[in-house]
Image (cartoon, rainbow over all chains, first blue to last red; front, side, top):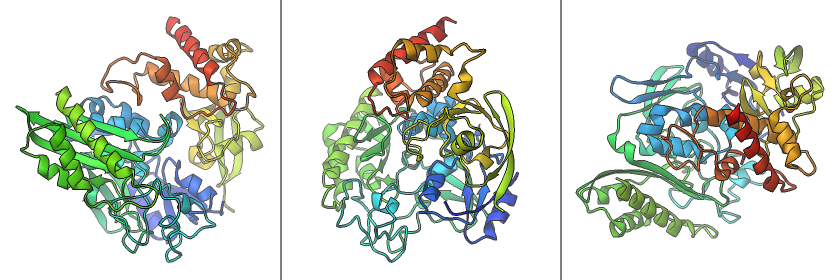
Length: 328
Length: 174
């Protein structure tokens, strides 16, 4: 690991100021991804500004009837929170399907959003990777790409975003609160992560110095009937091949409203807006659910080893919506 | 230059030490304080051999920076025994032969102790049917899921699960 200076601040403006003046500084929260990347010298900050002990560790109901989640809330505490479990079960399930008990106890909400891809070539410093070393090339496009993107990728990068939590938050239309050198802003979660385009080194739209302080979940009645389903190569403790976060409101057999987001298929959590649009107002049922999934996946451009993700995603979407429509 | 003075309370004993900011809790425990109970397996948070209780919760000490946990209360497998009496989880692992080479065992035992506290607190898991349920019933499937962060290359899982099950039953009786 490269040497670095460690700083701890007690308030958000102090943390932002400490980081903003150092071009090669990074925020440290739980460290479950960053410390690993530093050990491998994939990330080599000169300065770490520790934000884990900032006063942003609470889960609170907001005036509009939603919930505000502090950025330092651990994945464990968020998954176990009674309000989240009853009102937004998809989020609790997504968190519980990720990592391990020990990791969830360290990992934070803000850090989970900002974790880096687990693309094997990003981790292998002996191979080219545009995300790790811009302009060096993408080893995955012609290499082992079973785990890679089928939607929204570019000729420069086919990596996927690894978070389960962010997929659920995308289906819930969460907002990400950010403090930066120029003040505060509130970003719809769909605009936080980016598609790779010709700048795959940029995972998110955050500027240097911007710190995630909280995530807001808007009130959403259909989230009571929501579910996260994750398909992976072993029963536990693995990243998703494909995952689905869904919420569904069916009345008299007709889809009143639906939210659908996919994980493991793109450089960001993939909001399946095309499928949502065709489903609203249509009869709930296996045939329509499958047809909607197929419409969403028409844009899929699978790679040599991951064509299986297309029918897999279709089936997981269909099955998840079917279960939600039957349980209600 | 990049050094900080920190305090760690390890198995009830207070230690002050100056560490390089790069030092993980695992290396601080093993290399600086001579507590070799947490093991270095993968050193990347994938195997769980380094699991300790960090301020009461199980955590991978290989991914926690020592400077970031100044003042922390740490319990290792060594500190679970009280006054020379093994912790019920330790006894249960012995009775059920829940190990072969033993390398992952301290991490397994600490993780299991932390896991049972999580169950007692009513935390659901990935295999809990209804995450909004008030109480958790600790089936073998629940034990396996909740312990999936601890790998055993010998494959002693067949005995680890019953060992944890019995310790859980004993805890419930207390």
